[in-house]
Figure 1 (spheres, rainbow, N blue to C red):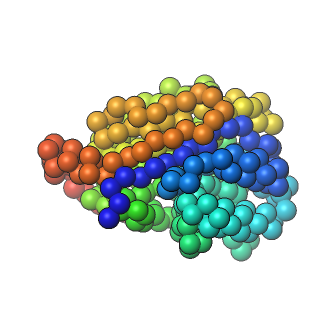
Figure 2: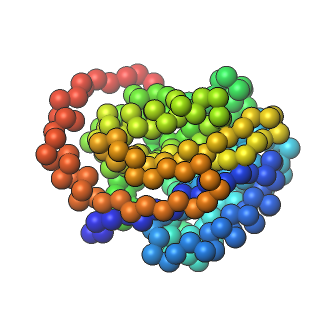
Length: 258
């Protein structure tokens, strides 16, 4: 079983409501990612920005992006992660896709839609948390506003790595930094956060602050620049830490009705 996971976080500005140009832009950035990388992580709604007008984008672009993700994953022999505006039947959802190197996929629909921006009126909320295994790591991917809700991200003996993809704006960036660190500490887990840069068409600014925290809450990487951020995570190191400090065994046990 593989004991390390090499990740690449792409932090960049997004082109507003333009999936074709965003895919082209990411294709260029991904081209130069080293071949020993295991997983590439893109921001939330990486083909459009955080739009509340998904009908402005051709409905086929959701499937086009999934096809593009599968082609990239297979060509690079790496997993690819990111969320997009995706139409299912007559409703839109903010859907995260995890594409394995062989082209198989798993998906997660954002549970906590951002009511402050009216996301709940445009996108259908998800109901199921996703946890899957990849390269020996058990991974739980979540989306932006989910970060504010610790019960949804709570460790249940089922994951080693939390991944948050986001469009998290500058005025509340201190909360982003603090909550990423908190989720790592309280769950004794690696925690990755990938945010975007730039300004969208609603004049919201995004400062990046993509980062990785280890289970002690120490910062592994952090960036405010337009760049690909690299890190290598140790599964054995995580297991050793959890075995030495068995804080998770003392956690409160409870269940919630959905």
